[in-house]
Length: 180
Image (cartoon, rainbow, N blue to C red; front, side, top):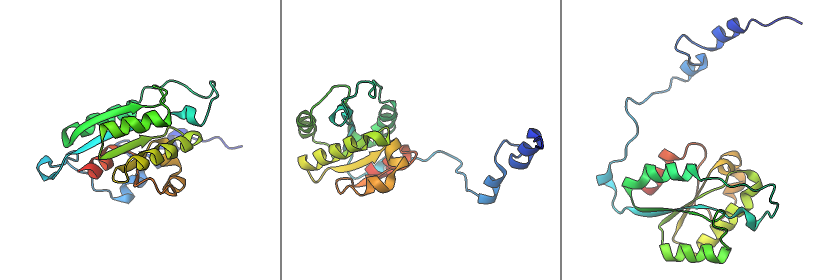
């Protein structure tokens, strides 16, 4: 078996600036400044609710469940605070909310848009249950699914008639567009 010269392979793949050489072939137009939404162009700031479904609705195995802080939703909430009227996060899993309790929280908060995150395919059904609960509260609420499940399996997610949008990949900029 022939030995591989890693330095040579790297030189063939990576340019002097540390970028993959094929990146140049794509000829992307890189922006000079970060994407910004003009706040004055927003006609009505939306009330946003982010939800972590209760994964216990579909899985009672204590060894398969864990406690996580929804950092993804915290970062997303912080990124839209100035362009929304109000932002709230409900972690139905951490609070161990029943479907009825979650429904009551949604009714009381009266959001315009709800973002749902599902961390993996195995818990996809909990996300779909959450979207159904939202639409049972009000068909007018816009539902957005994001997270690992939405990115890894968007075709499956798209079959759910209770989801208005599915965000694949980096959600920060996409979500800002949806709400503005």
